[in-house]
Length: 299
Image 1: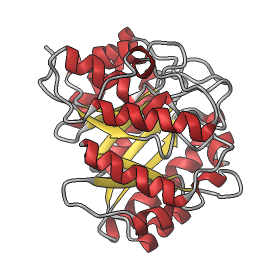
Image 2: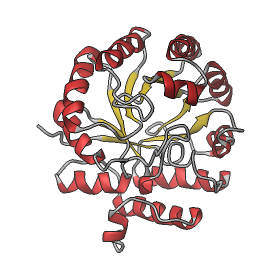
Image 3: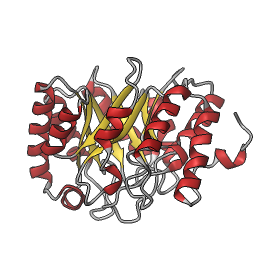
Image 4: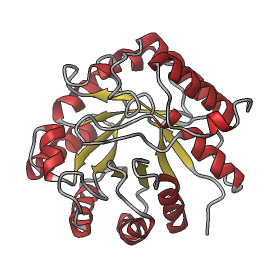
């Protein structure tokens, strides 16, 4: 059974830009946030509080948040990977953070410079600190469906880590197919168990399209009951610490498919296409999203 509507969280300004060498000016990021709001996007990840030397594109996240309009009907969040990131988010005035660790020990060491065990211990401190400051926390697991370095990630490890996340009182839990290795059957087997365990805590899927299975995985998840997905305009994205990483499922492609199926997103497709096309110009390259080229006159 498919839903009548879903929530899409736009991640183009964070996951989408974090590996890009062309640095987008703060003023342009702020403009894009406002255009996304006008298009009907209700959840936007504006950036991340990470090491600016390693990810220079994210150096202005606090400045972006300070400059954008705050609307009660739009949730703005930022990614944090360690306690310092949480403290910076609190200082910036954020009310919602996405605290994420990797289900892969190898990726964790590359991405956060911590073993999986060390990362989980840090995660517990992050959640407690954020909660004490009154922030809502989206807990996340990267590489939940496979790792380019380790191969298959045991499902039981993802289940156990998810339970530890939930036991800390997180407000949402996100499973990321960071490498795009997941497949619909795997989604059915693993996500079904997480949904049952999560109860009333929303489960979010963050799907990459590295192997062309992103939208197929979204369909499988919707049939299970998932109603919340991350996307990125133009199909931008990729982790700088994952070999061969490519982008998220494209926001505009996802909207187009869902609305053709009669599933509402509340987002104006033409506005997202316009942002994706402008980003191609700003970055000086072709982006992988498809519908913007198939139906260029759509508005």
